[in-house]
Image (cartoon, one colour):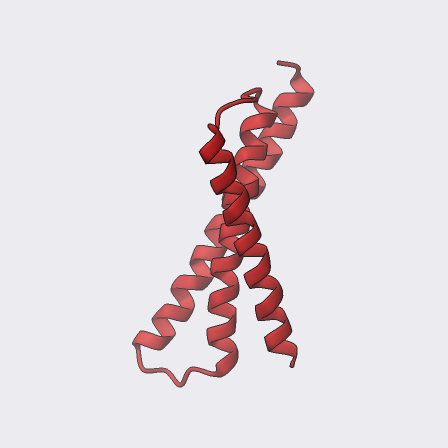
Length: 104
């Protein structure tokens, strides 16, 4: 493995970890607000769903790209590839629809 491949892998890994931690922090924050009987605005519910959709996209694209950057080319089976592709499409569709709803 070349040093540039390792550097790209580390960048993908760092971005994926920071993105997932940020999304789970936001999800925790919005869930905490709802559980403490805080007056929840309609946008809070939309943003909570957006964090879940963004986490699905990060997990379905970030993890496989990171693994490929570290040199693991065929680490998913046929069903695993289909599942990752399906989760990515569902996450993107949810993010698109929720963004459209928020602006409507």
